[in-house]
Amino acid sequence: MENSIKILGISGSLRKGSAHHAILTYVASLIPEVNFSISDNIEAIPNFNPDLDQPDSIQHPAVKAFRAEVEAASAVIICTPEYAYGIPGALKNALDWTVSSGSFVDKPVGVITASGLGENSHASLLLVLKALTANVSPEATLLIPYFKSKMNAENMIDEETKVKLKRVLEAVLEKVNQ
Image 1 (cartoon, rainbow, N blue to C red):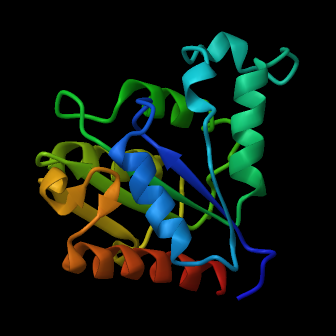
Image 2 (cartoon, helix red, strand yellow):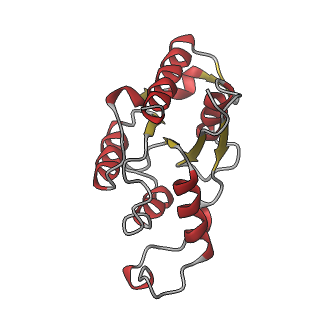
């Protein structure tokens, strides 16, 4: 694997020290030879407004930075909780800002939903990524229900989940190398 591969991790949780950030950090540790960074930008992105998303408009710096992060990445891995049966608002908002830019078009994307149950958020996020025409294969998705029982503080302790996370990563890398 070349170090020219760049993977961007995006956590759907804004909480500092979140388990979702820890999961992305664990996934990054599986491939030290790849440039893996985790976005810390989505909290600063303003609410989506199509009036502000015009080619002749000055874009908000956080929007420009997020789009640039996604566009520069060879692949993206999103790890998110479920809030009120849906995608966390900040994550959905960030994704909305990429519709007109085409930042996710054909981009290999992995989706990890770690929550109490998480199936609603997982399904909704997959629909959003379909609308963005991201390249998401079923092998690159993972729903981790009751994830708190699979982690100890900030460390993944469940061996089966570790294997599944590695499979998601391998599926994403396979798409990058196609």
